Each structure stands twice: as C-alpha cells, then as structure tokens.
Image 1 (cartoon, protein in one colour):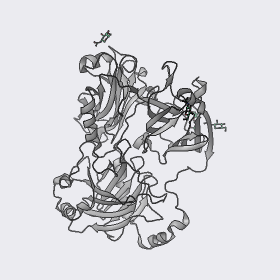
Image 2 (cartoon, rainbow, N blue to C red; image 1 turned 90 degrees about the horizontal axis):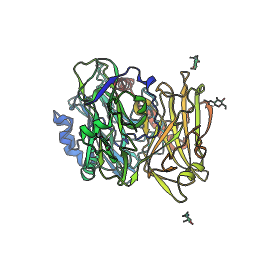
Image 3 (tube, rainbow, N blue to C red; image 1 turned 90 degrees about the vertical axis):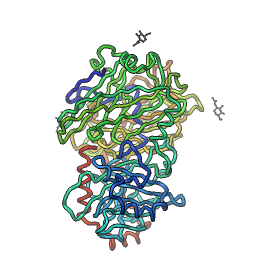
Image 4 (tube, rainbow, N blue to C red; image 1 turned 30 degrees about the vertical axis):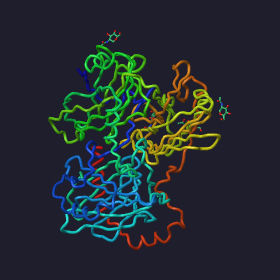
Length: 593
Ligand SMILES: *[C@@H]1O[C@H](CO)[C@@H](O)[C@H](O)[C@H]1NC(C)=O
Ligand SMILES: *[C@@H]1O[C@H](CO)[C@@H](O)[C@H](O)[C@H]1NC(C)=O
Ligand SMILES: *[C@@H]1O[C@H](CO)[C@@H](O)[C@H](O)[C@H]1NC(C)=O
Ligand SMILES: *[C@@H]1O[C@H](CO)[C@@H](O)[C@H](O)[C@H]1NC(C)=O
C-alpha cells in the first residue's frame, strides 16, 4: 500500500537540496517518443498514409545507416523521422521527413530545449536553400554568419503530404554558431539531443504539437539504449522493486505536487526485497500519463519510516533518482552498485510534479521508477562527489546585481586526502545544477595548474534540464587534482542563494566509482564551504561581469567565412512567417515539457 499526500507549495517546505547522496537519473537517452523506439521506416508515421514518404525511402533510404522516428505525443502518425550516416569520419549526412507543407527545422540541442541549439531550416517555398541558423533563446532563429549545411536534395510539392530534406555538414565545422557533433558511439556516453519542429507556413492555423525532441546515438546506428538496458538487466539483476503511485487521480488543477512514500517494511513485505543490504544496479523510469508528467524526484532516507512513511518527510533529503522528460533506463557499470538496506537507504519518498493545464478530468497515473538489484552486493560502491556549494553555505547571500560569476575552488589537498598516491577514480556522469537565474556553468578539473578537463553548459535552462547531464566520455581524477566549479547568473530578480527553486544553487554532481571516504566511511569524498572539514574547504570568490562568457553563438573568426557570409546575405531570405511558426510551435510545447 502506498501512502500519499498532497502538499501545496512544496518548494518552501522541502528544501530542494541534495545532501549526502545524489544518484540522479543518468539520463542516457533523451527521447520525445519516451518508450517505444522504432527503427523500421515502413512503420514510421504510424504506418498510415505515408506513401510519399515510402516512395522517397525506397529510392533513397539506403544512403543512410541510421533511422529513427519520433512521434508527437498526441498523434503517432504525426512526427519526424531522421535518417543519417557519418561519412568519411568528418561529415554527417542527414535526411529529415515530416508531414507538413511549409517548413521543417532540425536542431542539435544542448539542454533539450531551444536555447543554445544549432538549427538547420528548410522552407518548401525555397526548395534550393537550406539555412544554417542558431537559437540564442526561445525566440526566432538567427541565421549563422557561416552557412555550413549543404543541401543535397529536397522533396516537397503541393501534392505531397511530406517535406523531406537531405543535407550534409562537417561534424566539426569550427564555427561557434554550430554545435560540434560528439562521438557518442559508446553507450556509456550520453547520446545526442535533437529537437525538430515543422509547420505549414502559409497557413495561420496553429499546430502546437508539431514538435518533437529525442536523442539519437549518431555514431552508433544499431544502438537501442532501451533494448541494451533490458538485456543487461535480464542477464545481471536478480529482481526489481518499484516505487510508484497506483492509479493516482490527477487533479484538475494546473500544477500538482504529490508525495508517495515507501517504508522499509512495505518494501520488504509488499515487494519481497531482501530484508538486508543489497545492490541496485539499474534504474528504469515507469511512465504512465506521460503528457501530465512534468518531472519527478525520489528521495531516500536511512530511517525505516515504518508505520508513518510520509510523516517525517524532512528526513528524506537525499535525492536518489530524478526523472525529466526523455530520461531512459540506466545501468550502472559492471561491478558497480548502489547499496540499499540497513546502513544505507531504507525508505523513500517519490514526489511527482503533475501538469494539467487543460484541466482534463478522469486521468489516473501510476508512474514512478523501477530499481533493479542483485542480492549479492557488488564489489564497487557508487559514489557521488558534490562540488560547488552543496550544503548551501551561501543561503540568503545575494547573487549581486546583473551578471555575476561565482567560483568555488576545491583545493588539491582534498583529493590528496581521499585518494592514495597513484590512485584514480572514474567519473562516469557529470551533472551541473543551478536554478532559474542560472545561465552558464562549468566544472574544471585542474592538474598541476592546468585545466585538463572541462564540463560546460553554455545555455542552462532549469525547466528543460535542471540537472544538466554533460555529454562527455568518462574520465579519471587523480590524487592531487583540483576542481573549480563556476556558475554564472543573470540576476534580474533580487536573487539570493538558498534551498528553494526560487532561490539559487551552484552544485556539480559527479557520479563516480569506487566510492571514496575517510574515517571508516564516515566522511564521503565531498568539497564544500563551511562544512567543518578543512582539507576540503571550498575557496569562494565572486565578481560581476558585463556579459556571459558563452561561446556558442559568437561570431566565427573573421577570415574563415567571409565568402560564405556574403553568399548567404545574397541568397538566404529567411521568412518571418517561418520564424514565427517555429516560435509559436516551440512556445506551445514548452507548456508541457
Ligand atoms: C527485517 O529484519 C529485522 C531484523 O532482523 C526485523 O526486526 C524486521 O521485522 C524484519 N522486517 C520484515 C518486514 O520482515
Ligand atoms: C562578492 O564579493 C564581494 C567582495 O568582492 C562581496 O562584498 C560580496 O558580498 C560578494 N557577493 C556574494 C554573493 O558573496
Ligand atoms: C606512484 O607511481 C610512481 C611512478 O610509477 C612510482 O614511482 C611511485 O612509487 C608510486 N607511488 C606509490 C605510493 O605507489
Ligand atoms: C531583495 O531581497 C532582500 C532580502 O530578501 C529584501 O530585504 C529586499 O527588500 C529585496 N528588494 C527588492 C527590491 O525586492
């Protein structure tokens, strides 16, 4: 039995703080279609009235090695298909098909949303043109100074229901108005985030659902992260347990936060988990009423909470799992596990943020998360290193007016304390976390005074990706390394640091193994201000800036692109109508992302 309760305004009641452990979602795969992935082109577009698409595919499909279809949530026959190949290690060829008569846009997205995306646009009215553009915010695209997409072919006519455009680009154009396409072959690396939108440009009628987002593993045509996860769990897990609601009636209000609580006894008796310590090795979100799910978070506590699981919710402060649209199952590396049971988490609180802007009645939701585990504890314990200001020592401190930079340096003595000489740990997921005023963030690893690794989010967007997973391969940290975590805010609203999502944070969460601690496990590896552990005392400084240090969207080096820019000015007349379409469709979608 699940005990539940609704709290209004939970943000002021439950600090959105990640205390000793965060085990976020490790979202490998950010997918608009959420569950079923379909790689069989004849089934794309709901296998419904898609002859024009099939005709194109029969003639051209084998030019492409990867095929993916992202249906809109509202209508599986309306969506976007993408077909692609990496050519000669330096180019990507892409074909995009949508059911539209006006225009289509494809974006390489940093945070899963519009801001900071690199977009390619095509208008049926100008069949000879392809437009290389970028998005600096949630407004119309800006045409790039350098046009890096080369149109291969376009297929659109008044008699066709589809626009299909084929184009080609360098993987790394060197242009700061383009995104570099990351080598994402290995499924341990987060895959590539795409957004697509389309419309019938002349028409003023409005189709807010003509937009999808999804992830594609551009360098790995066969990879299906969902199937790969299932196979791994079939092979390795002994069992699973679930923390989710049971037909929770979604309220007919715009925003609802609901708490579902799970005590240790309930899990042991109700779901037959071992009444002892065991290792969680994989996480699968269970998504029911997807269009009403905004996000959910699962917090753990070391207390059993038997009898009154939801009573002492303030004890459930460790964020153990977080889901936002598009996150998919995640398996921990071989031999690595997260311990549940006595000495670790024994109770959980799942908080689901439901959206119901259209006040739809009669919806019942059973979403949550499934934890796969092995009875035998895995030898390597998962650790979470928190950097920046993880204990919110700056609570109540003003950000300062305008654009400000806040730097948190973790001294090298800290890694010398937790790691033996010549010992290394592997960082396999890196998340950057701020709140609404956060604009840009980076986490630098410094070795012998030199930056040897940087994780960045140029365009942070709390609504899209409040915990920004950085697309990068795993890397190692050595004894003597130093971290520098830097957050940039634009303080338009008298902002201060604090616990609620209306206040600000600056935390980097690094999921790593093997877990490091001192004093017999009493102090896990961390770095913080005023935490009373001097080797790992953060050095903090701040200053105000005239502008954000964003690279994406800045002008390319002058000589690189003079000729192309001139050509662009002459040939590209990006229509305002299309820009407005893009904007309207995207803005509408935001309401339920
Ligand atoms: C779990 O084990 C403890 C200690 O042996 C015991 O007190 C408790 O009743 C057990 N819980 C359940 C649900 O079996
Ligand atoms: C930033 O630094 C200045 C001194 O350089 C200090 O007066 C101010 O309080 C600091 N701001 C914050 C948010 O700590
Ligand atoms: C660390 O590695 C260096 C170089 O291989 C070696 O000389 C040194 O003895 C090692 N230190 C320890 C404590 O193993
Ligand atoms: C800004 O916040 C401080 C501290 O919360 C408050 O005292 C002050 O009145 C606020 N100023 C404005 C202009 O809102």
